[in-house]
Amino acid sequence: MQNLTQGAPGREWAFFAASNSRDGFHSYYEQCFRGAVDVLYIIKGGPGTGKSRLMRELAEAGEARGWRAEYYYCSSDPTSLDAVLLYGAHGQSVGLLDGTAPHTFEPRMAGVREELIDLGQFWCSAQLFEQRGEIGKLIGQKNESYRAAYRYLRAAGECLDNGRDALLPCLSGRRLERLAARLLAGATQREESGSCRTGLRTSIGMRGRYTLPTYEEKATRVCYLEDYYGVGYELAEAILTRGREAGASMIVSHHPVCPDRVDALHFMASGVSFIVRDAEERAQPHERCENAAVRCMDLRRLPDATLLRSARERLRTAARGYEMMLENACDCMATVAQAHFALESIYTAAMDFDAKERYTVALIGKIFGE
Image (cartoon, rainbow, N blue to C red):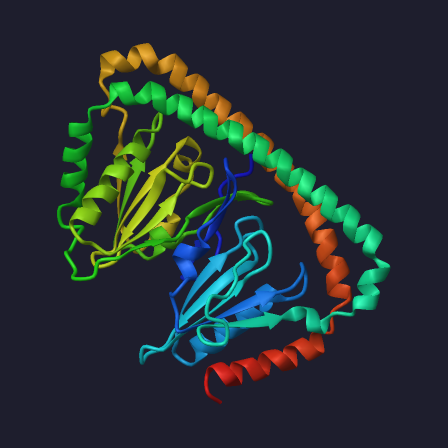
């Protein structure tokens, strides 16, 4: 499997809003974007039509005018954007997102809170029609590769479930709660309107396993929960529960394969991040934490030692099965990439990008009142 990759250059607020999971494509679009801004532009268009570039250009235009941007990257192709949210200094806000399949997003108050952008107006339909046979073939290849990847991800999720079933009898819920309370001392600050937002840290996609650096780069203090046998995820869940009880504002990341697991939390007021790190990620350097204090918590002693001895072989088998299934899923995603980028080339060749760029300039003027 590919090494973990640090994405999103610079110090952006950068997340994923979807994942390729055991359940197939798992979207957090509703949680992340519905009602998040005053006006939301929903972009429709095929691969290679410039959706990501449009979002990037609008975000850069906003930042040049003093607006704050949040970037949401594509879970399948983390070099592309799925969405951008922009916040002005005087409380105004606007967002742009890719509303095409598989993350289809439809307006509920069209023309009021949502606007549609159709990039199909800039392509040559006759040119695409001539390529219809190749387009259909590539779509079929892409869909079949996705189906194969999801079968492996479903199996990977089953392995994690088997490991969790073996682990839970070895863990004391009271010990987890006490440790969570101790870790959160000083990390939470009660707020009148404490919110819990979603922003994924890691994806499984065309470039393998890919991790964004936001939870480290935006932290004043990072606490790595060094995971063994899944203990880190149980502790992260306990921390989330305690944080909610404290009324803290948090950003929460979910495991890309198993959406019911928490793999990272960032407490907004204190700037403290808690991040679950498995064996592969533990091998990575702490260079993303250059401005944060770092603490690494070895959780191997948290389970009952006697009970763990009898469960250890089952836990190891589950862990090996998970890594094998995940590697196979990443191989399938690599074949998705071949078809996807071939499709992009066909659509890109049929686009009138000069006309699209003129449209982008006009849209920038409309959004920022120029």
